[in-house]
Image (cartoon, rainbow, N blue to C red; front, side, top):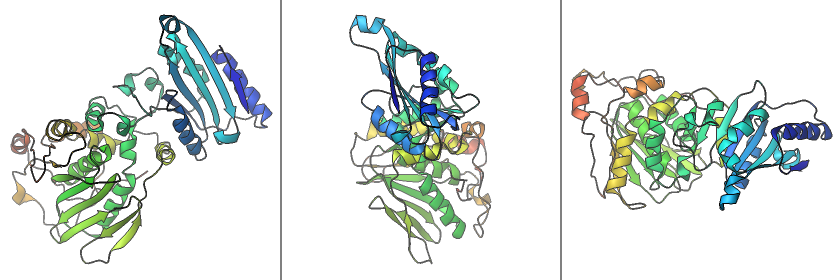
Amino acid sequence: MNIDLTDTTSGRINSALVKARRASGIPAVGMVLTLVIVTDEGNHYDALKAASEASKEHPARTLVIIKRHGRSPRDRAMARLDAEVRVGGDTGTGETVLLRLHGELAHHAHSVVLPLLLPDAPVVVWWPEDAPDTPSQDLLGQLAARRITDAAATEDPVENLGLRADSYSPGDTDLAWTRITPWRSVLAAALDQRHARITGATVEGEAYNPSNELLALWLAERLGVPVERKVSEGPGLTAVRLHTEDGEICLDRADGSLAKLAMPGQPDRHVALHRRSTSELIAEELRRLDPDEAYAAAVKFGVHRLSKGLSEERPHGGEGSGAVETPEPAQAAQAPEPAQAPEAAQAPGPEEAEEAPEGAGGAGAAGSRTARGTSAKKAAGRRQAPDRSANPKRSTK
């Protein structure tokens, strides 16, 4: 059932929602959360389609904020709210309200959304594009327990990761991180089967793909080894290679669908690792509303040097390679023997992530050029290098 409301108010929209539920024979409110999507006319269709698919797993009231500031001074000075209420049909198991904010009202979206939130239910805000620099300080972001952005939708994804590291607040997450959940699961499971000391790693993927950088930062932060990044033709992430004393552990996905896992002394096996749709990514993020400490630790681990290196030394879309370096261990002789890998280390909290060594870095021209962080030796001399021989396993979503 669809109800169009022109020049309306939040009170009339609530009345229309009750009317639509009764007409559909669903008088009770069965939603578990409120999903707020902040977008524009050009992108709202795809975002709403993804949210409708995700609502089959997570019934939600979806509020789509479409800001229309207007071009002329007269349009910018006006304040009008148009709404479209959808219940049943293609909207999934929840309710959908399209809110078009005209003129000055576009600057006060939070005042329109607040009366429409489900009582005693968590709020999730998603910016498919044009996310604020600091989501937790945005007026809509302050209403939410979870704030979702997408670095891949920005003009400079790698530089945007640095912005996310600066503005991180518990509850923030990014779809570039969600896309590598299956990769992290398979790599952690592989190290559970093969206990060996990791000496280095290589991540291969498309140029300027933020998921490549986040996976490299995660491996460097969890394993304490240098991680090289290489540009491939894609699609997306194509391969991860873990260099061990016994040989190479390789997870290779050349076609974007089926990956091959090769481990020393074991037969090759195939792993389903398809490129997931936006609806699947949103559904995964809605399964957990607590702070993602592993994402916080990864995005803060040297991401500023990573962004600077790519921006200055490799042109957009060009060939090249780079590395995420860790501080050189000053007491490497004290490292334990790699006979058995210890238990999987827990993902550090944001406070521990802020204390991570500043020696992470990334740069790349063609060949094997590697930019090391200027403070690497100072960090190594300041304290003993931590034991990073544990596998990077964490509980996946």
